Image (cartoon, rainbow, N blue to C red; front, top):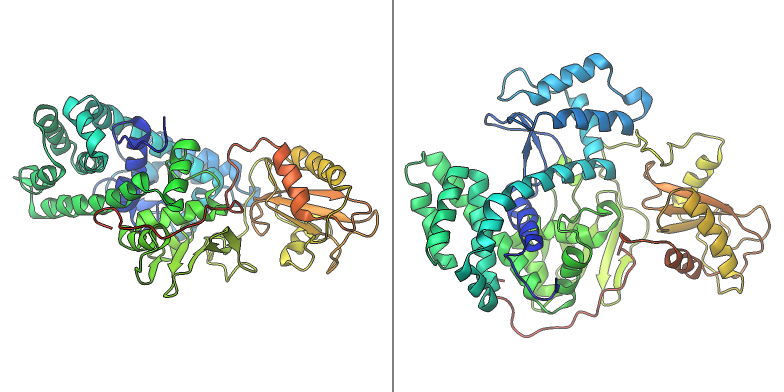
Length: 490
């Protein structure tokens, strides 16, 4: 599929619409998605961008997988007993509002897992099942409608709006969504006509609360799809990177390496708050004045999983991830700004391990030494050296033995030293945030490394390792130049 030819009727574009215009913009917003949420209705506990309800028929079996995954991920002392697992299973599978409450401690432990890389994979698998269900019932039938196919050639943005609104209505009320689908199968309609239909025929006979919710949902999904349409059809650096993520990397969920990738964090925050996202788009993509913009989690729990994205009055864009690392965007790409800012992981403390990953550090061992180097005082930052390939080869061997697929950061073991002077020197490499006990790391003994450029060593390592999901945190973004005009509605 050509990433620069937008076809909202294709399955991959439908997935992007479902995850982002429907899920992020109209379902979750800036509320938590990677945390258990107790419904005010009859659904019980749910999780995810497109809301997996554990209390619904046929979905409760996933509770067993959730708890099994948590048990494997957590430290032995933090695991639930068999009795607690049975009780949690019963409560998480129960619908309604009575008899299924979780304690604060239970929620904190499970939510910490759901925010981890392993937990995000679990939630995203649930999201994919939901989206497959919606593709079969909404996306695929729409993709076969002749007049929509023709309209998609001349006005793909309008087709995107129609697909998004139909999918959203189906999310809210499957009967009304199916009714709209039948209308579209037999009658050619503009995006404006679909919008009007939802606000009239689509809510006829429903109670006032349901009518209000459907109209509000329609308006929210329109804001989301209009921002997404702009990035799907734009010609600037931001639009190009969006399409690379969705179509080249196949990551419509914005999920792979999210916790260490400011680019994914930026797109996530933009789509969760389309009004602020549109301001960011106008400034970064089009070079047009837009005023300041901020997109951040609405509460503490949401801020543990969502970055704070800020466009200041000077037009400078910064992304502060949920793990405290702050990046700024310039014409050269993303730049890490200093040390991590004050952490917002009030609940998600270093209390877990993942299989194949480093355990929490204890005093007196090499791991403790490695963790202590994350203060930034001993960066390997010296000139070029002929032995760079040999050193990179040694580092690469240790990186691969540790199960790593690349290197994000490297430090020296000597406190305050900037070169390796003797055989006792150690180069510690991390893939991810060194402050996160779940991050993979390796230690390599290096001799006579004076003059080695760490960037060159890392380039050799990362070039040699197969990294299909390599973080773009340190990749350069194309120069962003002012454009004339802009997509309608932005």
